[in-house]
Structures are given as C-alpha cells and as structure tokens.
Length: 278
Image (cartoon, rainbow, N blue to C red; front, top):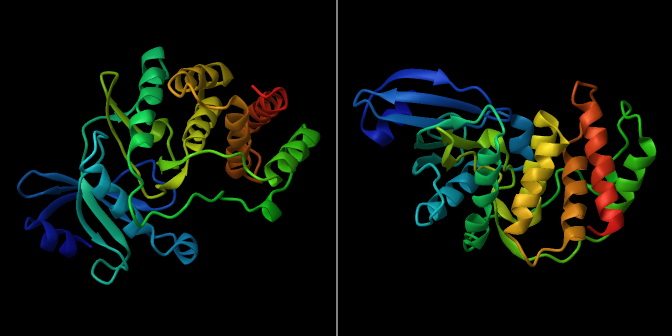
C-alpha cells in the first residue's frame, strides 16, 4: 500500500494513521516526506465489494467531476480500481482542512442545508450508477426491538409502492454531518464520495435529517429539513416524506441500541408527514 502511494506521489510516506469514523472501508491519513498530507481509502469490506466491485472507480469518477465544480471536495491523486497495485481497491486523495462538527448549531444546520443545491445542480458524471435503496422491498421487515410495529408495517407498505416522480441529479448518497468538514463553523469541504450516484435530491436531505435526528433529536433534524426545503421551492413535501421513510427503512438495523427510541420517533413523524401530504 505505502509503496503504491510513494510511486504515484513521488514522495515517501513517513507517517500513517488510520482515521476514525470509517465504517465500511479503511481510511488512512498519510504524511509524505515533503510534508504533504494525503488520504487513502482502502476497500477492505469483501461483502460490499462482492455486491459493488466498482466502489473505487465510482468515488474516483465523482472526485474528477467535482474538481471542476464549486463543491469543495478532495482532489483525486490516483485510483487503483481493482487492487492490482495496492493490494485492495484504493483511492488516494488530498486532505482537506477541518473536522466534522461536534455540535449542531443554527449556523451548522444552515451550512449543511446550503451546501446541497450546488451539488444537485451539477451535471451527473458519466459512469455513476443510478440510485437504489440499500434494502430491497422483499428484505424490509419490522425490527424486533420496535415498540410501534404497526407504524413500521405501514411505512414498509408505503415504500413498496412506486416512488414519486423526482428529477435525477448528482447526489452524495451518504450526506450527513460526519461527512462534512468545518473550521470555526465555516464549511471547508464534503468527503466520502464512494456512494455518489444519480438519484433524487430528496434522499440526500432525508439521510442528513435522519442522522441529525438520531444524534441530536427531532427538533434539530426538523430545523435542518426546513432550511433545506426553503432552498427547493418547487419540491413536493409528500415526495420528501416518502424518501424520508425509504431512508429510515434503509438505515434500520435488527440490533437493539440506544438510538432505537429515536428511530421509532422519527419514523412515526415521517409517516405522519406522508399521510398529511406535508
């Protein structure tokens, strides 16, 4: 791995640190002997690679497109699409300044919302796959830990129906506060483009809203959603509620943990929004 990094950069790696926060791949911060700092994503999840063998090339495609856009994202240095050179499929990129925000202030929520329209206005890069839910209709089920199984059954029924019509745009697909960097409350970049695809803008809003709800509560999540909705004046609230439900079903796990009550609360609210059409 380090030999490949040295070959493509022309500089020797002198310090390597595995970065926290990655859940489906290994991500390393690497300092080179010319003091340059780079980031390497190494795809080590065999099950994910078996389902989606193009993960490295997908992120590389997104980063190439973002290099000529107003979106601040890492610059692509090199990609080993198959792992033939690095041992595993890998993407080497520049390191951005900043860290994910540990709090959700009004300023942070506004920045998270305001970053999305520019992304969704970018042309969809050739080579990105179409959006697909993580959970197929046949795989969706009511988790054993829930206290509101009827609500889950109702949400599953809604999401089994055809999705509402929505423009297909360039989406991040895993947009949430952990993938957005800040420096003194100023947004400095968006990272982790491995899930980028062509799909509805509403799924980016839904995924961020759900992550905020689980970490910080419904009030903060609803504030983000209101800010985001104000930037999409032609958006259909019921369409957004549909994708809120889809993302919640995608995100749910069979294991019980401390976020389960918030997940129940969020799903109930999302179903209510869909039923009201708002």
